[in-house]
Length: 295
Image (cartoon, rainbow, N blue to C red; front, side):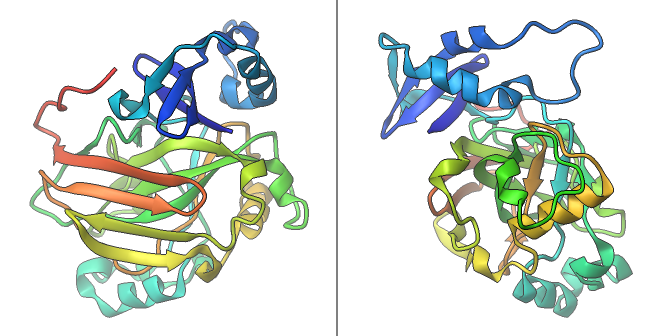
């Protein structure tokens, strides 16, 4: 199944070029009182929501092209990111001063530096676009396979890791180049794009063999396959869960291949991950108001 969020937090089932509005399925979610859960309630109850969605026979059908798509996850407890997780990207960073800025942390391998966290406030959907800051510095695009944790995971072995995945999406990790810590430079508002929807894990039994690519204004810049990741999805879950508990709705972006490049206001990104789909994302300056969206 492919779940999307659109408009004012409505829930949809993507079926080809159309979306069935199954917002009524959210009625099965448990009520919450303060202190609120530190996880995403929809993802924690995804099976129950999916079961209810299947029974909504009279759900309105909307054309996908008319909708403003939000992040398929509304309330992740954390966004976990994998740095330099493709060998060729690691090499291009080492070879290009514009990428590493003589920052020693950028010249090490993922085995040495581990993972990092991005602010949850950086999360946005493809229909909301990217608002660039620090326009006097280079802002780069990074396309990534993203996955969402479906149940609490602590000290999980790579052998069992895929049982903890709720689904997959496309991730864009937008980066301001400079000397600051990764978490700081990658966490401005809109600098984590997730979408266009969540494909449930049963539809992607092997996340380690997916083509992915990114174009800017029609120019192909990144093209690779997830088999080239240094640490695959199971290894990333094993590593992350050995340091902290992963909760339903936590988002993991798995690293980007070579070909990262600068963005500018007015650009249009087209990102693709095999078995997930594609999404178009508009780029603007943070000082500009977002373009009028769809429903």
